[in-house]
Length: 242
Image (tube, rainbow, N blue to C red; front, side):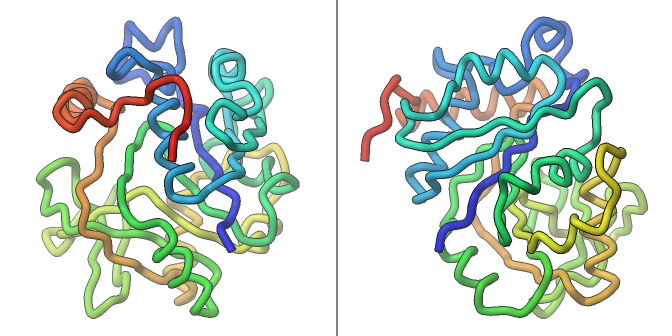
């Protein structure tokens, strides 16, 4: 079974000012189309048909651009933070009624072209509450924040970095609904704290991927992904095709 995908797209994107003062990061154009169009087309290619967009800042613009997802041969629903930004974990907590018993999570500024079905199968085969994909980054494309050893996440932190951290949180996670249902609604919650809590309880499995990631959360990342689209010809072209 292919789980519903939640896309976290509610942040302020201050690193991309002044462009993101007027539009959300997901609508930054790459190859003449909003980034979210490229991301949705990739998810659909990987057999994902149900997406929940967790939005906050300027989220109405994303909803207007994407609509119900039919242009991508998908069903896209929206969960809004409301008057107060809830953080990555809080946004997922609010979206729980739309997500199902098991769901995947993606960041709204990341393009992750790797084998999703294999990741989903790996999680289904284990009795864990969460999964984090990791990539041996070695500080090349972003700050490494994971110690991954013998197939296990030994340490993870975005704040307390150590020289042993050669891997990075790649950006695809899976969770069982119970992970979030115990937290209060409409309160700020950081997804990194959820990951760390599961790791400490030995409930977070690690899955290593080997395809580099692209992100548009920085100007360098934007330029790299724009170049990738130009070189590979993978730009979204208005209609989903098999």
